[in-house]
Amino acid sequence: MPVLDPNPQNGQKKMLLVFGAFFAIFIVIGVIATVLAP
Image (cartoon, rainbow, N blue to C red; front, top):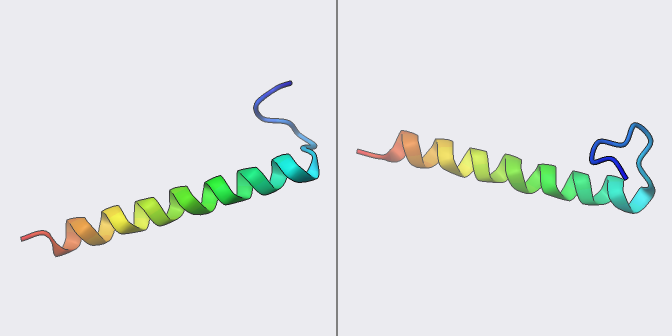
């Protein structure tokens, strides 16, 4: 099964959404830590 499926199933789509949200939060935390760093 390809990693980037053009028509992913419902479970795979939800998993990708959760992973994307976690990655976005991780980036935001990293940016905030960089800005607040002395």
